[in-house]
Length: 284
Image (cartoon, rainbow, N blue to C red):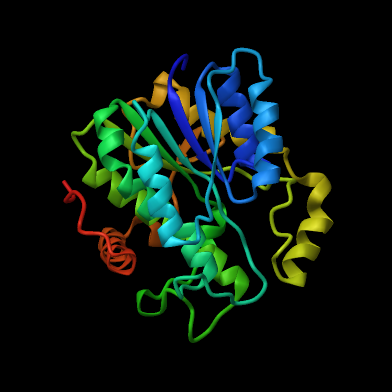
């Protein structure tokens, strides 16, 4: 991994920071995408102190904003190369919130952000091939109840349902992306990191917070959760593997809803329309 350039979103804490630290330890140049400047700078200082660390740097962006995503992609497009893009940023909310662009917030951050950022960086990734795109999903996708006619849950909102749906979106996005990147040398995979003892869920409903607090001593650490991310980012075992869903570094079969190719393609088309993105790459 020496000299490779890796972009990690949601890098100020939790799995994102643990991933950045591990990648820096492998000698990569890590670009950490964070929303909060102070927290980002603190995390960057830790990453820069890692033995073997490359030239790491911080980029500030609110990934729930389409304009900030486009501005960020414009800056990243000036990189000499981009070997690994890790879409990690995500959250669960207790109440329905609206992004600056008018989208339900969980849908905007957890799905539209990786969808748009990855597509805007497609040319850079292809030019840098072999390259990898890794998206952090969750086993929570198995509880999703996805309605393509109501992706933003305007009719029947629930914070946990919005989160589960977004994690299913991540897998559908990954499989469709892998199809559209076929033959380019860029792979796309996603994963369930495990149940992690981090600050995740602090903005969730009281029931979600209670459940996490109750089971916190049984949860794995962020370092342990980052293991599968690092595996997908660096292992030669998966250098040509694409379109997969991984748990504990092993390829697993996701829920049936995550294997529906027609749904994946339609979700892509809707997402492209919502983000103003021309159709990028046709499925193989």
